[in-house]
Image (cartoon, rainbow, N blue to C red; front, top):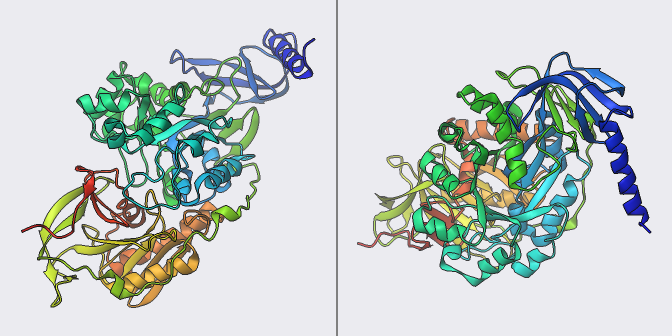
Length: 583
């Protein structure tokens, strides 16, 4: 005899068949729609029947509630194929309140930012916090915590730790495999994680890999990449069966270049993602809707752009119930009136109107969790700790590339004081940078030099330092660097600006040193004020995004030269180097 659960499911299936056949009245019918068919690329002018969260059919149906859309377009809810919720600087519930009204109904999130600080409890916090938000939050298990063995994070997650969440219904696979040298070299630790994720989707992160190295990286299951910066990289990966997520974030913007490589042969393997996007950017420009809008403005066929934001990522991540408008799919829908502006007017989640005119029609709730609080575990510092002795006046320098998280490794002649320490000079645009281990383990301070940040008369510090999220600070004098760092310690995480020995402004981020529980609007306002301070008090050009640019200078898996709490890391050689050049 069938169990109650099985019987209930069969009865529900029977009802759906009767609804689809027109033998019963559906709960909701959207009339006079222009329906985007992501399977054949056509636009269907018809009605859309919905019941109990599912799309029942397209055609002439009766409904308990009938809404006339008066010829507006209806498309599937948009999907962000790869993102880090933490980079929005707000908790998942506050993020959902903003991005759902902009059409994003599903995200595939890699919570490796908070995992580096708080471990498995941090991942669980993110999963719990996205519940009841009318946002589908799916998760990839962080594969590289820390990103490489060459830095110190709050936690190290091995295969057994990740396996505790492997079968969670919200977990889809293994997150971006950033330590690509270890994959290629057959390191046991990373191979154990790949083996664990066998038959699950495995996300890649392989900037500049090509030829045999790319083959070796893919051979054990890596199937996506969001790090392409050239059409040649994108085409090579697509030719090997990879899905390519075209990224348009705040610091890394690749859409304008890569969209030129989307054509009838490649389009089915292309998706959109934000990766890392700040509050101001989302509020002003949008989320995945911006990717679609921008692609259309650059000449991409509108249906193709929508396919890249819906059915393509759904297929990539085996999300069989979303990404299309067809019988049996979830009624996650967006409504808009033209392709030129692509402004989202309404959002339906499982058949319920949850957002209208960029305003959420749902309430959010905060999730309390002691595991993600009080994570800055260092004592106050002083300026003397930032002295940088050099063996000569020739040094290795991290050169910022505008609009990119890829840096250049350059060698420059610098000024020294009478004791042989690096000395800032108005004649050189070279600033001091330091990474301070803040998880209470080593007390390490790695110190180096940066060109093209243009900072004068002060310092900026933050606990957002990808991916180990130690404290990173940049400045033109040691005392202001210490002032900014000590403000971060007092706040238990965040962003701080100092000048002339005083704190000029700060943004508290008490949740893992990465997020605020305040609204995205209020966080954006504070960020905007901090940016103004950076421009007016520290002479940083408006064209430079100072906070996210700074945060990526500590990521030792993005070429060419980066800095960790253990010092300079040459990503090309994948090894440490000294600041002083050998002469």
